[in-house]
Amino acid sequence: MAVTIEDTPKDYAPVYNKMEYLLSSTNSGNTDFSYLVDIYINGSGTKTVRLRIPIRPSDSYGLVDIHRVLEATLTSDVGSTKMTAASADTSNSVLTYIVKFGEEYDVAGTLTQFPDLTVDSTRYAINASVEKQEFIDWDFLADYDMTSSADKFITNMPDNHNVSINGHGWLYFKEKTVVTYYEIETFDSAGTTISTFRLDPTATSGTIQYIPSAPETLNGIGAGYFLAGAQPIITSSVASYTIFLYGGGVISETRTFVIKEPCKFNANTLIFQNKLGMFDDFTFYNGDSSTHQIERKQMKVNIDPVSGTSLSYSMQEREKVQYYTKQTETIKLMSDWITEEEDAWLLELIESPEIYLQDGDTLIAVSNIKATSHTKKKEARDKLFKLEVELELGYDNYRQRG
Image 1: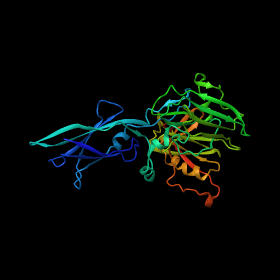
Image 2: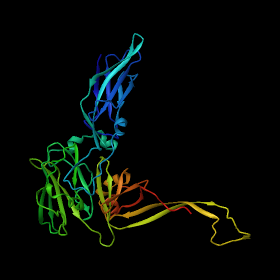
Image 3: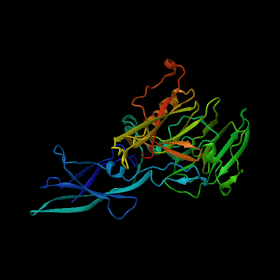
Image 4: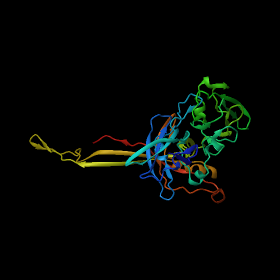
């Protein structure tokens, strides 16, 4: 008896794309043959599910896609606006799994199972969903496994990212080389260094971790995590700052953030799940407008006009009574001028299944962005452009019954 794994998913795979195994067996010619696929998640000794996969008539291989099983286990890890640690683990955005393969077929008239004949190595699934062209060449470790200054944080956000001084945000990364500290260097409007800070993230050790990156979140880090410098990190003198990871050398790209405040209108920051499964932030600087959609339901009631031995009528009597009032709020936001790179990245915001509107230290759930299309902008054709979005908040309000 032998089951051979002919091909596998990548070691780190986006869970919303195909995660397929190709199998073969020396016993595939037996009557009522099927492959057995047992999936174990996050080191559990109890299998999550057993799949029975029939052979392909053309070549007797077994082809199984396990991503729907793993997808149901992953959720997300949006950062906390009240975060005081220098780093945090993601416990919901990545999982480990092991798949054990066996077979079943007819033995002397009895359908007999032979499980766990071949066991695959431990692999990882990430709460990501990427386009087909990107998926074909997907190599998560080549791009995101932190070992050198060429390795990226888990975001497609363009560099020189504009942030509000009151904004919240985080950078997510895959740790390979142990991060001994991350460094923040602040600059004034002339580009002169103001201060350098080093923060200790070693309390966390998860597969994927995140660190504060926006001004308000950075200024919330507790004093015990500073290896160099002290709060406040971001002051009114800071015009920009950079962040990189260090572990015996620089082991990440260096990210630059530019502090920008609105001229005439209020700023609104959206925090959204990007297509790689982590969370990005973007600030709209040209104010907001709100619309309240009101849904009413009424019923007609009979008025009793008898009062003692008289009939009594009043204009305060209501023959129609409102018994249901629902209010849904939508908010329209307008960005400042954006680049072609930012416009392409912000398609991830428009498509995102999980969006929050920042209100001070509170994240308000957004049901969706009311857009069914997005035209990709080109600077050569469109010159200057902005992004306008309409948000539907993730809750309804109700009024009293009449």
